[in-house]
Length: 309
Image (cartoon, one colour):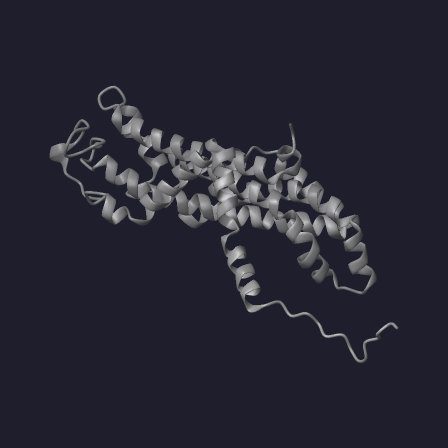
């Protein structure tokens, strides 16, 4: 005779150890991903090491730098690289190694701030344009086409010329040209996400537009957003150095890498080549590190590239 169960069936409750183990696994899940990235993308890992060293140098500049970056000593001007001055001195007798170390702060602040502001605003515009469509999408894309017609440096030059020479204006001048480039990439991904069934289902049950965008669209376009963000870091640092070199970026006595290359660095290139060589190497190394890391991150996050044989 079959035995029937009377009353509600009790729900199985996972043991406390399983729940704790699941939480600890979630905390440790990032480390296998990092190890896999290091093994499969050694160039990207090398770029990450360069970025990490640059960040640590900027944070601990007061400890790393042996001199005051603004201290002037005419008696030791154009001292060749040696034991007391590793990278030599400039025309004012300022220690170049110290100024390059402090210059990492300016490069990181302007580069990271401009890239984050530009990529974030571009991502928001791309999502809104793709989701709303219609006239909103049409007008936004035509505006983006106009902005994309200008090279990044040319548009940044025009903006900083109008706004004036200061660090906030330089950040804004670099961030604005990044907006359309990020918006175009994010919009193309948001358009494909918008057509998925779960987005249609969320609309059918009466979810608000903000809920659909934040819950379903934004999480699925984070990969291209992060790729564009890291890719623009190097460009922002390079544009900041270019603006300072042209006299439209930071002003003396700010220890900016681009500013070190302008003026006397060209005038005394034959007499004291190190005045231009070491700031140029710092800019090249920073841009190289960000580009390596950004390219590897793109390969790791893009499913089309990840599964390519």
